[in-house]
Length: 186
Ligand SMILES: Nc1nc2c(ncn2[C@@H]2O[C@H](COP(=O)(O)OP(=O)(O)O)[C@@H](O)[C@H]2O)c(=O)[nH]1
Ligand SMILES: [Mg+2]
Image (tube, rainbow, N blue to C red):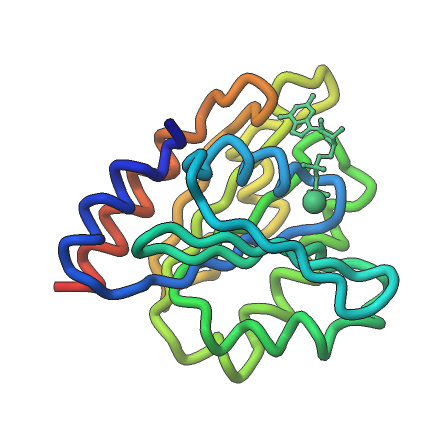
Protein backbone atom coordinates (compact mmCIF):
# COMPACT_ATOMS: atom_id res chain seq x y z
CA UNK A 1 0.00 0.00 0.00
CA UNK A 2 1.39 3.40 -0.94
CA UNK A 3 1.04 6.29 1.45
CA UNK A 4 -1.22 8.02 -1.02
CA UNK A 5 -3.84 5.26 -1.08
CA UNK A 6 -5.89 6.78 1.72
CA UNK A 7 -5.63 10.27 0.31
CA UNK A 8 -6.55 9.08 -3.17
CA UNK A 9 -9.46 7.08 -1.79
CA UNK A 10 -10.86 10.01 0.13
CA UNK A 11 -10.48 12.40 -2.77
CA UNK A 12 -11.99 9.82 -5.12
CA UNK A 13 -15.31 10.45 -3.43
CA UNK A 14 -15.24 13.93 -4.85
CA UNK A 15 -14.43 12.78 -8.39
CA UNK A 16 -12.04 15.52 -9.23
CA UNK A 17 -8.45 14.95 -10.17
CA UNK A 18 -5.72 16.91 -8.43
CA UNK A 19 -2.45 17.34 -10.24
CA UNK A 20 0.73 17.27 -8.12
CA UNK A 21 4.12 18.36 -9.44
CA UNK A 22 7.17 16.78 -7.80
CA UNK A 23 10.22 18.95 -8.51
CA UNK A 24 13.78 19.53 -7.38
CA UNK A 25 17.34 19.16 -8.60
CA UNK A 26 18.48 15.83 -9.99
CA UNK A 27 19.67 13.38 -7.33
CA UNK A 28 17.60 15.03 -4.57
CA UNK A 29 15.47 11.90 -4.10
CA UNK A 30 12.27 12.59 -6.08
CA UNK A 31 12.03 9.19 -7.75
CA UNK A 32 12.74 7.43 -4.45
CA UNK A 33 10.05 9.45 -2.64
CA UNK A 34 7.46 9.00 -5.37
CA UNK A 35 8.11 5.26 -5.52
CA UNK A 36 7.45 5.07 -1.77
CA UNK A 37 4.27 7.10 -2.11
CA UNK A 38 2.61 5.64 -5.12
CA UNK A 39 0.00 2.91 -4.81
CA UNK A 40 1.01 -0.40 -6.32
CA UNK A 41 -1.83 -0.22 -8.85
CA UNK A 42 -0.97 3.28 -10.12
CA UNK A 43 -0.81 3.70 -13.88
CA UNK A 44 2.76 4.68 -14.67
CA UNK A 45 4.17 6.29 -17.74
CA UNK A 46 7.75 7.45 -18.32
CA UNK A 47 8.12 10.07 -20.99
CA UNK A 48 11.42 10.99 -22.59
CA UNK A 49 10.52 13.86 -24.92
CA UNK A 50 14.15 14.87 -25.49
CA UNK A 51 17.40 13.06 -24.86
CA UNK A 52 18.66 14.08 -21.46
CA UNK A 53 15.35 15.09 -19.99
CA UNK A 54 12.81 12.66 -18.70
CA UNK A 55 9.46 13.01 -17.02
CA UNK A 56 7.83 10.41 -14.81
CA UNK A 57 4.05 10.40 -14.61
CA UNK A 58 1.58 8.33 -12.68
CA UNK A 59 -2.09 8.45 -11.90
CA UNK A 60 -4.39 7.12 -9.23
CA UNK A 61 -8.15 7.47 -9.32
CA UNK A 62 -7.98 11.08 -8.20
CA UNK A 63 -4.36 12.20 -8.13
CA UNK A 64 -2.03 12.63 -11.01
CA UNK A 65 1.71 13.16 -10.55
CA UNK A 66 4.36 14.64 -12.78
CA UNK A 67 7.96 14.26 -11.62
CA UNK A 68 11.00 15.87 -13.22
CA UNK A 69 14.53 17.16 -12.56
CA UNK A 70 15.20 20.88 -12.70
CA UNK A 71 18.62 20.49 -14.22
CA UNK A 72 20.68 20.68 -17.37
CA UNK A 73 21.61 24.37 -17.20
CA UNK A 74 18.03 25.27 -18.00
CA UNK A 75 18.26 23.72 -21.47
CA UNK A 76 14.97 21.96 -20.89
CA UNK A 77 13.35 24.79 -18.96
CA UNK A 78 10.68 25.43 -21.62
CA UNK A 79 9.78 21.78 -21.53
CA UNK A 80 9.33 21.57 -17.79
CA UNK A 81 7.69 24.99 -17.35
CA UNK A 82 4.99 23.79 -19.69
CA UNK A 83 3.74 21.59 -16.80
CA UNK A 84 3.35 24.43 -14.28
CA UNK A 85 -0.12 25.41 -15.52
CA UNK A 86 -1.72 22.10 -14.65
CA UNK A 87 -0.06 21.72 -11.23
CA UNK A 88 -2.35 22.30 -8.25
CA UNK A 89 0.10 21.26 -5.54
CA UNK A 90 3.90 21.05 -5.49
CA UNK A 91 6.30 18.71 -3.72
CA UNK A 92 9.79 20.26 -3.82
CA UNK A 93 12.62 17.92 -2.84
CA UNK A 94 16.01 19.07 -1.53
CA UNK A 95 19.14 17.01 -0.89
CA UNK A 96 19.97 18.33 2.60
CA UNK A 97 23.51 16.98 2.36
CA UNK A 98 24.36 18.80 -0.89
CA UNK A 99 25.52 22.14 0.52
CA UNK A 100 27.29 23.03 -2.72
CA UNK A 101 24.12 22.91 -4.76
CA UNK A 102 21.78 24.37 -2.13
CA UNK A 103 22.23 27.76 -3.82
CA UNK A 104 21.24 26.20 -7.16
CA UNK A 105 18.16 24.70 -5.51
CA UNK A 106 17.30 28.16 -4.16
CA UNK A 107 17.69 29.72 -7.62
CA UNK A 108 15.40 27.11 -9.12
CA UNK A 109 12.84 27.61 -6.36
CA UNK A 110 12.90 31.41 -6.81
CA UNK A 111 12.49 31.03 -10.57
CA UNK A 112 9.57 28.67 -9.98
CA UNK A 113 7.90 31.04 -7.50
CA UNK A 114 8.22 33.95 -9.95
CA UNK A 115 6.89 32.07 -12.94
CA UNK A 116 3.67 33.64 -14.29
CA UNK A 117 1.83 30.29 -14.04
CA UNK A 118 2.73 29.94 -10.34
CA UNK A 119 3.27 33.46 -8.98
CA UNK A 120 -0.30 34.53 -8.41
CA UNK A 121 -1.77 31.19 -7.39
CA UNK A 122 -2.28 30.00 -3.81
CA UNK A 123 -0.77 26.65 -4.58
CA UNK A 124 0.43 24.57 -1.58
CA UNK A 125 4.11 23.63 -1.54
CA UNK A 126 5.45 20.73 0.49
CA UNK A 127 9.23 20.71 0.94
CA UNK A 128 11.11 17.54 1.77
CA UNK A 129 14.51 18.25 3.34
CA UNK A 130 15.63 14.82 2.20
CA UNK A 131 18.64 12.59 2.96
CA UNK A 132 18.48 13.49 6.65
CA UNK A 133 20.25 10.21 7.43
CA UNK A 134 23.51 11.43 5.89
CA UNK A 135 26.16 12.79 8.24
CA UNK A 136 26.61 15.92 6.11
CA UNK A 137 22.92 16.78 6.13
CA UNK A 138 21.85 20.14 7.54
CA UNK A 139 18.64 20.38 9.59
CA UNK A 140 15.28 21.19 8.03
CA UNK A 141 15.36 24.54 9.86
CA UNK A 142 18.70 25.30 8.21
CA UNK A 143 17.39 24.22 4.78
CA UNK A 144 14.42 26.49 5.32
CA UNK A 145 16.79 29.39 6.10
CA UNK A 146 19.08 28.66 3.15
CA UNK A 147 16.08 28.69 0.81
CA UNK A 148 14.53 31.77 2.51
CA UNK A 149 11.22 29.99 2.87
CA UNK A 150 10.00 32.63 5.34
CA UNK A 151 9.65 34.93 2.31
CA UNK A 152 6.86 32.79 0.88
CA UNK A 153 3.86 34.70 2.16
CA UNK A 154 1.16 34.07 -0.40
CA UNK A 155 1.20 30.27 -0.53
CA UNK A 156 0.76 27.66 2.18
CA UNK A 157 4.01 25.75 2.63
CA UNK A 158 5.47 23.18 4.97
CA UNK A 159 8.88 21.56 5.34
CA UNK A 160 9.56 18.03 6.58
CA UNK A 161 12.86 16.33 7.21
CA UNK A 162 12.86 13.00 5.38
CA UNK A 163 14.86 9.89 4.77
CA UNK A 164 13.32 8.53 1.60
CA UNK A 165 15.33 5.31 1.75
CA UNK A 166 13.69 4.34 5.04
CA UNK A 167 10.48 6.22 4.26
CA UNK A 168 10.85 8.39 7.36
CA UNK A 169 9.13 11.77 7.41
CA UNK A 170 7.07 11.10 4.30
CA UNK A 171 3.81 10.44 6.14
CA UNK A 172 3.94 13.78 7.98
CA UNK A 173 4.34 15.57 4.66
CA UNK A 174 1.57 13.64 2.97
CA UNK A 175 -0.78 14.37 5.90
CA UNK A 176 -0.12 18.08 5.57
CA UNK A 177 -0.64 17.98 1.79
CA UNK A 178 -3.86 16.06 2.28
CA UNK A 179 -5.21 18.82 4.54
CA UNK A 180 -4.26 21.46 1.99
CA UNK A 181 -5.84 19.61 -0.94
CA UNK A 182 -8.94 18.94 1.14
CA UNK A 183 -9.24 22.67 1.95
CA UNK A 184 -8.78 23.48 -1.74
CA UNK A 185 -11.59 21.16 -2.75
CA UNK A 186 -14.19 22.38 -0.31
N1 LIG B 1 21.13 8.39 2.06
C1 LIG B 1 20.02 8.70 1.35
N2 LIG B 1 20.02 8.50 0.03
C2 LIG B 1 18.89 8.81 -0.64
C3 LIG B 1 17.74 9.33 -0.01
N3 LIG B 1 16.79 9.55 -0.96
C4 LIG B 1 17.33 9.17 -2.13
N4 LIG B 1 18.60 8.72 -1.96
C5 LIG B 1 19.54 8.23 -2.99
O1 LIG B 1 19.93 9.35 -3.78
C6 LIG B 1 20.09 8.98 -5.14
C7 LIG B 1 19.17 9.82 -6.03
O2 LIG B 1 17.81 9.51 -5.74
P1 LIG B 1 16.67 9.66 -6.84
O3 LIG B 1 15.39 9.32 -6.18
O4 LIG B 1 17.03 8.94 -8.07
O5 LIG B 1 16.77 11.23 -7.10
P2 LIG B 1 16.05 12.11 -8.26
O6 LIG B 1 17.10 12.38 -9.28
O7 LIG B 1 15.63 13.37 -7.55
O8 LIG B 1 14.89 11.34 -8.78
C8 LIG B 1 19.78 7.48 -5.20
O9 LIG B 1 21.00 6.78 -5.12
C9 LIG B 1 18.93 7.24 -3.97
O10 LIG B 1 19.03 5.92 -3.48
C10 LIG B 1 17.78 9.54 1.42
O11 LIG B 1 16.84 10.02 2.08
N5 LIG B 1 18.95 9.20 2.03
MG1 LIG C 1 14.47 10.76 -10.73
